[in-house]
Image (cartoon, rainbow over all chains, first blue to last red; front, side, top):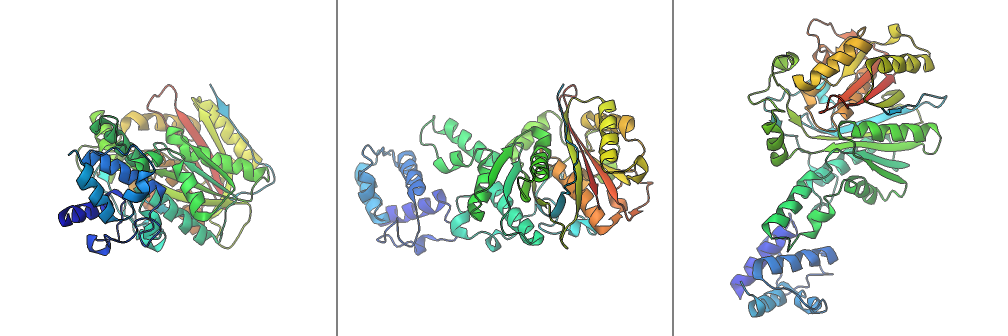
Length: 85
Length: 368
């Protein structure tokens, strides 16, 4: 799980172009949205695309996103359970 | 044949300030005294420190061209002492081509699935003007012109007309285009750029071989009706033409001069869009010979390169010569011409036409 969390942090920085952030700056338990990272709905779209592209996960229910994107850790847990690649 | 024209009334329009990012030192006028002479056909622009203008949290979603456009806009407004323009009007030939390529490549690579939304959003041409407006919180007139090599000229004409009609008092006019490796390579395949090192003296020998080089353009110009201590010069007139005969250019020149109470002898020089590509420059030379052979020729693409919005540098160069009261030898196309002191009126002639039977042309008059 720890390896997946580190991988996710790097991917989030790259996909969302968080130039001034390093993986160690992101707390895996902190809220991804509405917290210090300042992410918004367009970032959520980018993360959905990233999950589909990198892990083969298609979100069927938009309401699920709220729980999945609570933090990097919840993302990692969801990916671990549902990934197809 | 289309002929758009507009002649001056009593309202004076001034170029208040200009800021640029190009192959020259960014956001300065250092090129005028100490220019950089590019040596490679794919000349790279010099990037300023964007963090001084755009917070990282805001810039992370912006493509390179948007960052340049916002930075030159903020810089031009600051130089011109203007906090909020009445209008934002941009010219761009290709828009945010880097993001367009990114999006289209993703379409191909991902089999039309998993497409990145940010690249798509920023791939449109009018992203530039809208992003500037969002950054400035400007709710005024906002428009974008994409007319190949006269995109900037079209934007400037729009501002000029609206200023003359009294609909606005100031406008931020931009010319923004970026060159990407893919687009550069495509143009290389049709022999548009010089294959070896670029050399200014060879660029003049444009009848012999291709010597043009690419230059990304990001230039913001504040124009308005107020004359201030920062004012560079007066934009006396601007006209656009599609497929004009040289005689039409000559006629318009006389009307333009007459409307401004000038004669041919009052004109100090003409800025021409010579690029070093003989396939284009022969037509530029034809128009100059037929319509404006009296005047010394200024050129600028040996300093700023070729792009869809490089005509913006033509206006900029003329404005700076009037402001600094000098046309330096470096800007004169004929190496035998001596520098010209205290110029008062300069014409700017821009020719753009990959299809020589249907070129777009602009003629502008700038005065002190």
